[in-house]
Each structure stands twice: as C-alpha cells, then as structure tokens.
Image 1 (cartoon, protein in one colour):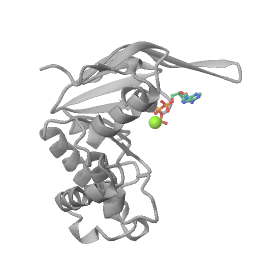
Image 2 (tube, protein in one colour; image 1 turned 30 degrees about the horizontal axis):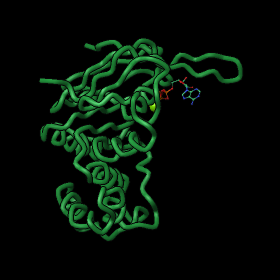
Image 3 (cartoon, rainbow, N blue to C red; image 1 turned 30 degrees about the vertical axis):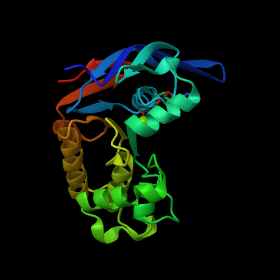
Image 4 (spheres, helix red, strand yellow; image 1 turned 90 degrees about the horizontal axis):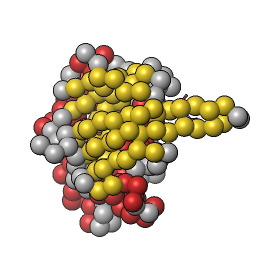
Length: 222
Ligand SMILES: Nc1ncnc2c1ncn2[C@@H]1O[C@H](COP(=O)(O)OP(=O)(O)OP(=O)(O)O)[C@@H](O)[C@H]1O
Ligand SMILES: [Mg+2]
C-alpha cells in the first residue's frame, strides 16, 4: 500500500536569543491508511513540531513532505490552507472550540461548502460520536470528554484522509480517554491515517505502531 504521508529527511531549527535549537533532525517517516500510530517522547523532543510540519502548518528548513502524493514544499499559503482544510483534520489537547457557537455549529464551521451546507454532516457526525443530544450545547455546557468528541467531529467534517492529534486525551480522565481512544481506532479502521501524540502509555499500547522522538530524532519504539 502506498503511504498517505511520506516525510523524508526533515530538518528544522529555531534560533531564539542567539541559541539554536534543532527541533527536527533528519526525520523520515511514512504513515499509511488504516493505521493508528502513536508518537511519544519527552517534553521538548519535537513531537508538536513534527505534527505541524506533517500537517502543512509549518515548513521544514529542508527535507520534504508528501500528502497523498502532493509535495507540500511546492504549495503557496492558499494551496496549503486548502490542503489542510480538505485532507487533514487536527485535534488539540485544548479542544479549541469557539465558545459562542453550539457543538453543531463548531463542527459545521470548517465545512468546505460553508456552515449551512455542513449542518447535516455535523449532526450525523455528532450522532456517531454519541453526542446527538448535545448538538445544541455550547462548549461551556459540555464535559471535557464531550468537548473533545466535538473537536474530533469537527476534524472529520470534510472527510480528511489524515487525522493529526496532539495529546488529545491530555485533559481527560482514564475512562473518557479510553472512549476517545476507541473512536480514534474506529477512525483508523475506516481507512484514515491517524497520528496521535501522547504521553500516555495506554494510548501508545493501543496503537498499531509507536514512534518515539528523542531530541529531534525519530526512533522506532518497541
Ligand atoms: N516557534 C518556536 N521558536 C523557538 N523554539 C521553538 C518553537 N517551537 C518549538 N520550539 C522549541 O522546539 C523544541 C521542541 O518543541 P515541541 O513543541 O515540538 O516539543 P514537544 O515534543 O511537542 O513537547 P511537549 O511534550 O512538551 O508538547 C522545544 O525545545 C521548544 O522550545
Ligand atoms: Mg507538544
């Protein structure tokens, strides 16, 4: 099977106040459809930086990323934004839901044909994630686990082939975390490519594959 995401020899460094930090050192990785991959490693090892390069949010200093055959380096910012919107779904630890919108409106907002066109799809996704009864609630009226499921529904609204999640269970208790994890497994089972950054052993244990970052380098973990 051809991998959905192919990263080759990624390097990235930041220079802040005269100090140079190499956040990605010669990172190569391939992610395939249907696979749930966990990305682990100590704080500051470069996990979020890698996610942001794979998801076309940041350009590497050198090396290349291809998503479904498209080389991200060749894209202008508008094309990169379009690719992110259509092919990549992001989920973050802090949910990042808009507080004044309902769950359904949050999910429908990034729909490629607009909020109104996305309404049906939003309801369908919320139903699938067990939130049919919560569609009209605002984030402040939802539990943390519910908010993260809304964020997951939002990430899925345009049927992306790739889901990139940065510590999605970081703010959830053990049981809620298991629930969310089962959803990530299900999403990978639908043939999507799923990469989940985690500090949690239970999350890593349930993945098909575990990658470990150490000081900007990627190592396969046992
Ligand atoms: N925009 C930036 N400018 C300068 N340094 C940065 C920038 N972004 C990240 N860094 C540095 O790069 C290193 C890697 O950061 P990154 O956020 O990728 O780590 P991480 O593995 O996600 O850590 P955590 O588990 O704490 O989230 C850190 O040392 C950080 O200080
Ligand atoms: Mg991080």
